[in-house]
Length: 151
Image 1 (cartoon, rainbow, N blue to C red):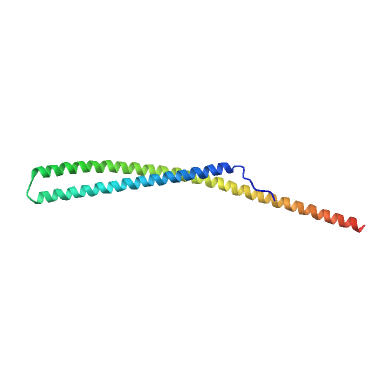
Image 2 (cartoon, one colour; image 1 turned 90 degrees about the vertical axis):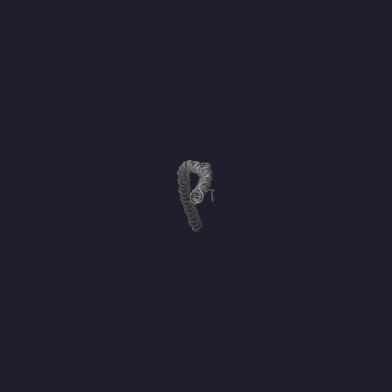
């Protein structure tokens, strides 16, 4: 029996490698988003601590310098929160773009796999047809030689 050889196997392998690269890219983008979200959580926790400290300063003996310092720290942290929100949104957009690329790569690979499966099915059908033809020829030969022997 002949061996099946897919003509576009190298293209299929390339598509598989591209898909793997896109999966890795997606994973790294996901890790970057997680990191930015962790930073956001840290900045929010710092903001909450500063706000709590400001409330405590206002409830105890009033020290204007400490209250002003707390207010500046609060403003600084609010700005950091805004910047971190922007970074998180950018990371989310990058993740979405990577997801789209990964899905496209997966679709291309699946298309080539389907093409390979169809080519294999055609190959099997051709092999079966060839086998039937050989069996018919063999049967005709055997039948023909039996009739010659009988005469």
